[in-house]
Length: 73
Image (cartoon, rainbow, N blue to C red):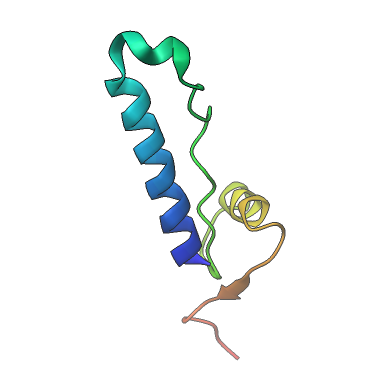
C-alpha cells in the first residue's frame, strides 16, 4: 500500500514540476491534479484522534489495521 502511495506522489510531483517549468507553453499542457493523491497506510495508529482516524480511513477506502503497543489486558 505505501509503495503505491509513494509512486503516486512521485508522479504527482513530477507532473506538477513539469507544469510549473513549462513557462509560456502552459496553455498547451493539461493542468496538474488539484490535490495530491491520498497517502494510504496499512497500519493505523491507536493513539490517533477521532478526526485523524476518520481521515486515515477515508484515504484507505475504509480499510486498515489499528495497532496499539500499550494495550492492557
